[in-house]
Length: 540
Image 1 (tube, one colour):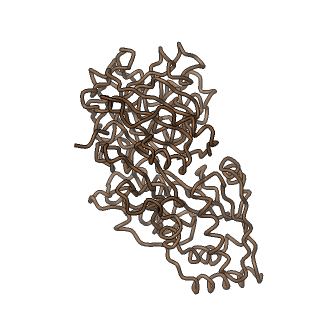
Image 2 (cartoon, helix red, strand yellow; image 1 turned 135 degrees about the horizontal axis):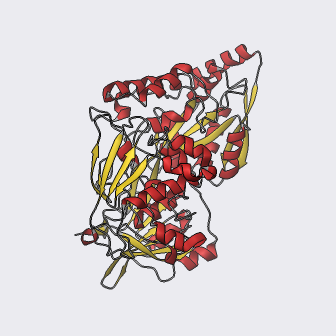
Image 3 (cartoon, one colour; image 1 turned 30 degrees about the vertical axis):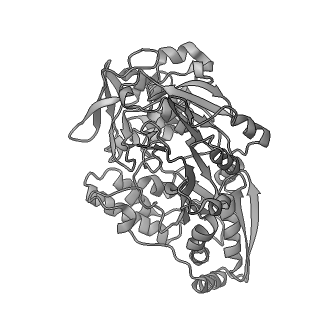
């Protein structure tokens, strides 16, 4: 999952705080501070977490999470669904009382239109419709055609059988299909409204329609989005908030000051501020699914050496990084699949049943490094460490990793500081040795991580290749026996971790300041968006 971090100027930050407050007389208004900006409110275009949070506030897909978060889900815009015996056909019944904020009925055609639109326009998340995601029939072929698909886009495996019946046909069974339906790129759009707006669609509040719990009433770019309760929402009676304000581009220091002054009710802070609030009831730390890891370029002769990769992994003191440097609830990575994120057919959490693949042992690291140098026929190495200075906490991580790697005698680390956009481009072109990366899960299944190092995967920037691994990943996508499939995934992780295909470093945590007058914000869900606002209510 992609994201963008923009640091706001002090003057802009100050202007953003004018006139905000946690309540307005008799109204319940929740004020949320977001450290980054919204890039788009068009669900067929957006590809970052902040935009997804905003879109999820005013729009909703076929399925959604519960108030408890986690991985449990319930029908949302759909009132019910049926699955064919072969697992290839899903038939959803759209709620009779589901409407758009302008009064139009929400229909099956709204989903057909939105999905076709994303793929035809070559949206960033077109891939997630295919075999790397929902496995929708013909999605991969159509995604390759993109803007040249023309009328062939009608071959996408989604059809409106009638006004309130949506049928989705898959190319192969997808064990996590219902879960992936919570992702914003699968949200509906009102074709008549979108086409009337033309190129202005989703560029301003008046060019947006809502089918979710709130509607956008004002949007000041790079500043603030104002939401009001959507009375046309099918479950409006259960929405207790009258409104929501999302303050954009607030750096942690500004957000903390706004919280202290009663201007916002939720603020994410960074490691530098944690000590100031430690011990206070307002400080809440929680885990996120984001996995921070290192790509190693296998086209680099030195990094193609297993002992060199092993040495780098053993040299990282992950616990020290999390507990003494980040201090935000982050935890050391034990493997490539995040903890407390996905559960197997027996109900057990994935990592609790899996192996631990990481440890800190500088003595063994040096021994492995020395052996690697011997095998390479050299006495020392110089490797480049690529990272984005605009990616927090990856910038802090990179500095810490440099210190760890410097402890290996014979290794010189050159820091390559750039910005995220350039980092990604360098990864794509193979212009790196070691690169700091992260992945936010698109759906709660181990495959969302393990796919990343499959041969041919567009995100396999290190060019790791293992035929047995690819075979297991491919087989897991068609295996209908859930227990057998789970074992395949464990075997696959064992292969790529034993070969140090990538080096997992830590699972991101977050430190936040929260106004105890409100409860119900969901931020530990493994489905859909990082934050869900519709369950927020005043504490009793």
